[in-house]
Length: 109
Image (cartoon, rainbow, N blue to C red; front, side, top):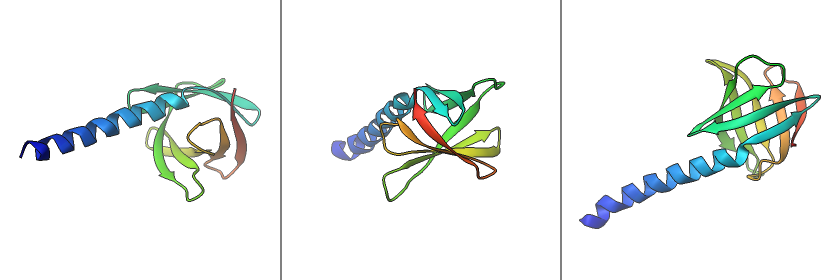
């Protein structure tokens, strides 16, 4: 009986630790085309601060593609503004796609 209680507890703990670790791995400065941004984690949330921008946008995990790329959707309030597509879990490079469909190379600085 005690084992049934501990399994969900450890599953939740593992999820929280893994989620926090991945978001902290993303922290840093990125060049995006001819501009740049800073991604910062605050607990489970990720904020994007664009160079010369006002305020921040929010990143939400969307999916892992069959090729291993990790996709994070970007929102300003409730409005989808684009997505970051990272080549793998090192979060060093990928593509940023704006809401208008324009794509930019993305690289950690």
